[in-house]
Image (cartoon, rainbow, N blue to C red; front, side):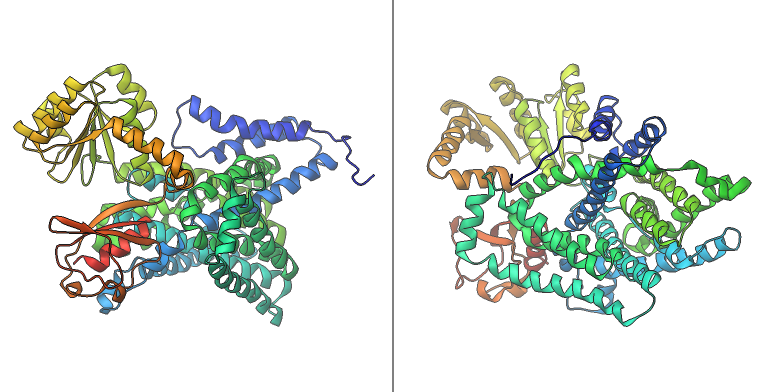
Length: 629
């Protein structure tokens, strides 16, 4: 017999844990609680079932749960690295210029911010150690400097701040804190376990492997044979991209394990960081699949097991000082992130800078992971570990709420697209615009439909698109597009007529089902979409270009097309081949005066040219910096 499979295994503990993982997000959705991360519910429910169902924490079933939790921990670090946009960090490097320009670089400011946080954290730990026993001050201080990109990113995305200068600053600051925290944790844990020895340099092997694989995979991606094979196998049962990602993660984890157990954290994180730098257009679909593996199964088990293993009796070591210790620790966690945020005051103002400092205080996965490792190393006590788990829950709840209170969302300000009519097409368009971090506001007159759209988390105003006052409330500007899609042709025309003739607005898009409708819109100077032609074109592409069609529909959510005007006088008359465009940006077409043409290396640019560029948000931002003043 080649394979001996036994079913003599108690599946009930795994059933309970997976049941909690299923119940946590479902309960939050049913109760319409949006600001509470599901992992907090998982920890709380894990503690509850630990009290009633896991009194005996031994046996093969519980050991398997511990293994799955460890796998979840590794996956968590892997996906944490994958969340970081490497291109975004590199694009924030200071360009050639004065020291004043470098001082405004998001990366430079993020490094300065992190340095201030580390210094304040250690000073606070030293003062705290005068009253509470802290076995290792430095490690305790490192635990407090962590930040959760997994909370910062969704909060900013939900507000449409990902592409703003303010949002970019906070994202890069959180990413830098994550990367540097993990590196400092790794070296500190290695020294604590093995001492300050020459073997410490073995950790550099992980970075060496990172560099080699980064260069190697970059070349393999350009080999036509590998491209063809990976495309053929990516959607088959083999799922080669997913298998490659897991293999890469385990290569780093395996190498790290032989160097030292405490290096596994860094290895898993670097594997995610490496994959993040490689994905590009495949990022969206592969991210969904990896998130499904991680957050769908392994990672919830880790957090539930944190709750199961949570021991409130550990708080007894503080005696009567427990409440004061927890209050002071919470104040310190906020203070060490808020005080350094004053370096952003000149750029964003005091209120926004402090709001950003509060958001940076949110700590979830990394603080728990670091605390668990510290407990295993014996550098923090069980009581301190329990305190940090509690702080992770509190900061993740408090920080986003305070941030939104200090910096309230004004959806009417800035760049936006107004969608008149809450039809299914308008809602789908709003969803796709949100995926591109673009702000969309829906106007809907029906109260029931308004409540339905609002419950789905979209920006929606209750009002009639035929009333001028609604556009005044939304602060409609000439730069804002208005898409009219009420679901009724007559009503569409009435709204368009109001916008064009009475309000003199020019950027209007609507649909047209018949030729007479298109002719009427042409007379008004309004762009109209022929639905029948769009549908026929889509079916044509599906028949003749199925691969391209699926790629555009399924895998390019992270890409978009922008029209960028050339206003930089230094580029006037320069050849395209002389301009170092971002690797993830493709120049598809140039519009000059009333003509459009496909560019090539010998094409030169003129002031006023409009470039049609396809690429990632980071790449498009880089192109804008180069061609615009």
